[in-house]
Image (cartoon, rainbow, N blue to C red; front, side, top):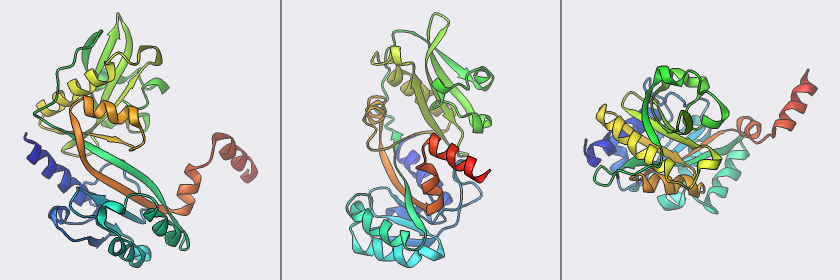
Length: 268
């Protein structure tokens, strides 16, 4: 699969996620459509979604619920597309959404592999390809980026690093879409900075491609360690997203465990 083909698969998936046409991402002008999550949207996406702004580097394609459409239309008309995902401009959007009971909730950068530069990276430990049956006893906090207990049926493939019989690093992928599998990776703290994460990530990317699926990787732009791993493993930035949700959902996510427990006690 070529880089061009993988990018087209990703654009078609993004179009399914928000309800636009895939070639909207290639236009020079901003695009606004009603938000409509397709039947084959990424399986971890959850409504309600107030709006979702997506850019593959040409423009910003925005899908918005009716309650926020006019605000979002004014926002993407006001700023160049590449400024729509950064401060101070996003405060303009957030303040106006907040007046209607919504807030910016998620921002993320997504990566696709460059097939011409996925490296064969050495690892100081034995690596093994793992499949779904191998994950049964691995739904533990230390592997929470590589595997997800709540969506365990989607965890389909992994590569583990072993010090003897001890698992010290794990890259896993989730079948979040029909044609795209998302990679996450964890390494035990005492084994970090030894090249394990990048060796596992690049190996898993190749294993995914061998199965005719597109590997993708997501990171917050500020998670430098994760971004470095993506780049070292042969991934390059492909698209960015910013999502707004009702304020109650965002506020709930901002609670500490102690605040959440106290609030639940008050409700009881």
